[in-house]
Length: 360
Image (cartoon, rainbow, N blue to C red; front, side, top):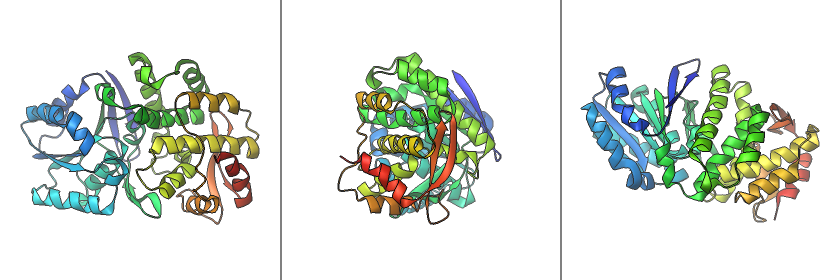
C-alpha cells in the first residue's frame, strides 16, 4: 500500500493506494471517528450493482449504522434536484452532525457527495472511495460541486475529505471509455509539471486495456503526487492550482454544449488538451511534436475533433463563463514548455483561428 499526504491549508489527510485497501477502512473509521453513529454511502446505479454489497459488508465491521443513497449515473447525478433529494433522504434517515458521508464511485459521485457533506448541517466528515481512473484526480483536492445548465461545476465549495481510499481492484471493471476518461487527466498532470513522466507515458502506455498493475499504480501515484503538491500550495485556486485546468476550458464547453453525460469528461478534456497545445504553439512558441502526440492519443482510442454542429461562437460564449475568466476575454492555461504552464487571456479571433483546426 502506498500513502500520499495531502497538506491543504484547511486540512492534511492521507490518500491510500493499493490492492484490497478497502479492508482497512473500518479500522480507520473506528479509530479516527469514534462518535460517528451513521454512515451514508452515496453511489450511482452502475457502481451500486458492482461494488456496493462488498463495501457494505466491510463497513459492518465498524458496528455503525450504514445506509445508502443511489443516484443516476455520471453527470446526471450532479443536478440541483439530485442534490436536494439526497439531503431530503439524509434528513429522513435522521442523520446528524455525528454522521459521515462516504462517496463510492467516480468523479461525479465524488463531486455530489462532497457537496452534500459540505452543506448538510453546515458540514459533516466525508471519505472518498474512488472506483474509476478519472477519480484519481477529482477525489483529491476538495473541489466539490454540481452543474448548472450554463456551466459545469458552477455551484460548489472547497471541502476536503478526511481520507481517500483508492483500491485499484475496483478499476478491473472499467470499460475502455472510462479508462480513456481518466487517462486524459494523467496526461494533463504530466504536461503541466513533469516532462520525464510525460516521456514515460509516451514510451510505456500503448494500450489502455492492457495496462499492467505496475504501470497502473505508477500512473495513479504520480498523478496524485502532482495534484497534491499543487493543492498544498494553492488550495482555493487563487494561483497555481488553475494550471490543473489545462484542457478544461474548451473541454467543459464541449461537455456543456453536447449535454452533460453525453460525452465523457476525460475525453472532452483530451479534445481541450489538443486545442491548448496547438494554441500554446501559436501564442507561446511551445516546441512540441503535435503529430506524435495526436497519433499517440488517437491510437489509444480518443476522438480529438469537434463535431460540426457545435457552433464555434457558442463554444467561445461558454468559455467566457469559465471560472478562470474575469474580463471580456477567455483565460486559458497554456504551456511555454512541458512543465511550464501559464495563464493568459486570448482574443476571440485568435481562439477561432486555432479552433477551426479542431472541427471534423
